[in-house]
Length: 234
Length: 328
Ligand SMILES: Nc1ncnc2c1ncn2[C@@H]1O[C@H](COP(=O)(O)OP(=O)(O)O)[C@@H](O)[C@H]1O
Ligand SMILES: [Mg+2]
Image (cartoon, rainbow over all chains, first blue to last red):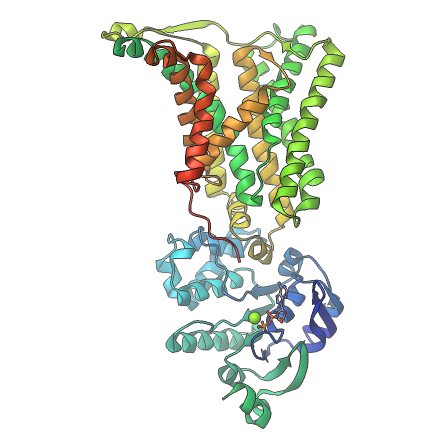
């Protein structure tokens, strides 16, 4: 059984239909990537999963129907969404940002264990605990955003363009960490415009265009596909 | 002239501190709600007034039941305070639920009008209840700790005069400071306090952290309103008489204090409250002297509003506020 499944999901912003009946599955332990150009509906797909937009269709997580569940409830159920643009709390310190990630974790020992684990991935964060989130560089903020979501001990990570606006060397680092998280068992749904790199670390991929899934296949197959090459890897 | 100013200075400081402490705690209520909803909760002045009435009502109840002599003053004070804080806190939660939450995605102006509506509703409701039960909307009760103290500042020499106050003045200032320190610690140190700040900064992302945003907003209203209600009790104990309209002008001045400090900033609200309290008392004592009798102390109210206008024109983000970037 797949961990996350979307079936014929439609999403609307007012009268605009941003998703026109998409389907997608993510199995436990996979990295699945969703690629597409600007405005295709990638972010809307992630927002549909975590309850930020109203949808019709069916979304199931771990066998339970989570369609239109409140955002804080999907988060508590184990879906961590690292939003586009990172969305660090700018006037909370790094430590407070991390603590908010662990908001629904009751046990303080677990929180500090999780924090140590986050520091193992991102040693930089440990040096900056007292700094305000908003004063960090883009790369550091992305690390904090991922670290913050790990504090939730999620069962799946939804990453929305984690490489956006970062220098190539940082992009490299972020992708390496995504791969490492996955090796340690984390299931990941990765949204990227950086299609080449995303397909290289993913096992499967979906291509979305104007709110419709136009392709779905093994990542290696998509990497070789002429259509994908022309449209997204140029 | 200088010696006149100096003579009244000790009294001005005591009165300014007292009034300033009241403004400061009420201002925090405005700033907390604004910080989280970007809404000016105009009903907050009426929450303060309701606190004063509840405190007075419980006091009258104690009196008529003959319990007042039977229990120590501090216990009566604490019970009155607790009752007023609980009821006003719940009122705040109810007001948010009924008058603001359904309008949360509507334009801000609509919520503002709703807030003004709630404000008038509470004035009339309290007036109705007061007149129904006592025949008058001006209500007095006996007060606790009303023995007079004299600060013999004149002994320090110069032209300084003495300052007169009551034991309750000291209680008012101390309790107000404790409330502010407690709130500051809560917001800085506790998980729910940090969540309040997180929701204020980015509501959507806070929800992604599994924070129940509605619960945090309700908590914010509870705390802000309970602080306002507690201040109402302190006020009623200080002045002995309350009426349904005491929250109106006081609320606007406390709001001015919040704007001066930088609306959304808790420490700014504290500073703004003290500043306006001081300015007002200074004006009230000295305007006559300074203008050779052309303007009397009754013009003191002008200052709060002049400050409001000057701040809004020259430094709309306030002294401690951050220039707000328009949210995309
Ligand atoms: N809040 C919104 N209101 C109205 N339209 C929106 C909103 N957010 C996104 N859209 C529209 O929905 C479509 C999909 O957007 P999005 O999912 O953000 O694309 P992507 O993440 O692939 O760049 C676009 O046409 C975009 O203009
Ligand atoms: Mg997007």
